[in-house]
Image 1 (cartoon, rainbow, N blue to C red):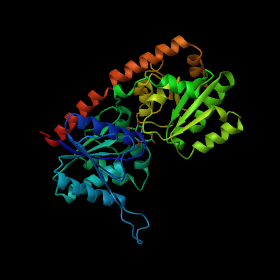
Image 2: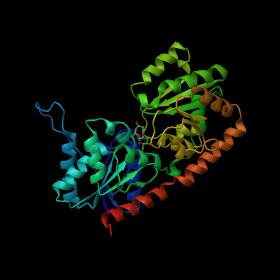
Image 3: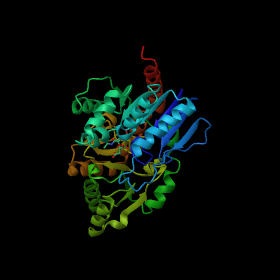
Length: 373
Ligand code: GMT
């Protein structure tokens, strides 16, 4: 198939999923075209079967808000015509699905649009009064729609009172990139005195409850030799650092910024901390499990579908910092229990969320979208 993929090229989970999906489809021989404003962070390729088409938004004094959505729709329509694409796979409702639908209209309906909803496009952004009608339109008018968890599917149906078919296809990991080979070296660098190592990865928005991450770290720091690696960037990161400095523990915080690969760092940690307020799936928690690092998370949204509580990680009620601390402390002070959970986490991630399964499902759904009967 000739497949166009449009997504956020930044470090968020939706861009990671779109990139890994495109790479895997190209490996299966499909012709893949990424259409977005910059090369996605995780898109490592030198394949003949992947092309990148940049969307440029012209500057014009009249444009107080440069119309990216329209530039994207025009670019999609051009790429479809030039490369005779069969289908556009839009990741995230706004603006990608909306722009793809506009392109479909411009092309007289001669292209199919599949939309994958990732979470905040329904639970946060799409709920805003000004975006609700366009999000509803994007969901109802796409030729097919997928959601990354059963939780998200339910949310879509209830928020938008939506009756259409929505197929759940879980996010996935590629076992071959989750090697633990480099982890000892990273551990020696970041935990030179045999400290326990925590990791958190996010975009540091309020929804990630960064203060809970800090509180868990501070409480554990009182009881153990522990350090924390922070991957990613965002507005609440300076707040975390300010609190850490005030508590005198900033020397044990390792800032790693945005990374195009995170697997080795995740593998070097003992536990990952993810206390999110809302999480449709929690790709970072899955990546941690695949790296053999059990996640201690809230039980928000789709997280209980991804993590087997007490077996491959722990899920606790949102905001229950004390419970997170006690679960983490028990594991960090019991090597056998931690090793067993780490082993189970890796097996669970590799079996249940294997990329091969997900790609089979996406492929079949593309074919069904192209030939509904
Ligand atoms: O979590 C974010 O704020 C980023 C967001 C995104 O659009 O990349 O992540 C969403 O999509 C990921 C990939 O499907 C999911 O793993 C995340 O759980 C989801 N985030 C939320 O629902 C808050």
